[in-house]
Image 1: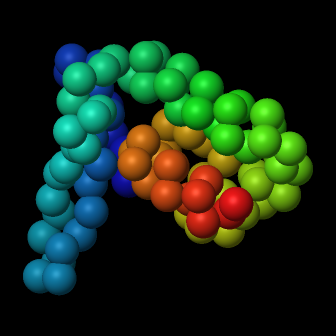
Image 2: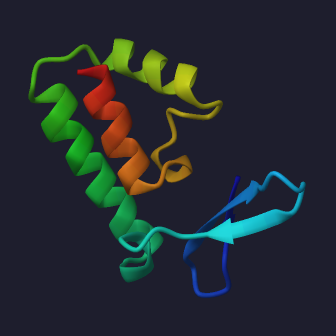
Length: 89
């Protein structure tokens, strides 16, 4: 789950094996605003999916298969998005 902090950054929440909710942000994401991250993710997708000749519709379906709401780049940490692109390729 993604939630927005008072400073405008996004935090990922997850439930650990004890059922406790934990919060985490990647090191990369701590350095940028949400808008900067969105642009970086979109540029990465353009360069590594569209420009490399992959079908964007097939990739969007793959992203949705990997995570509910997966077609929204804001739902992905940058590292996880990179991993799913490389897995798709």
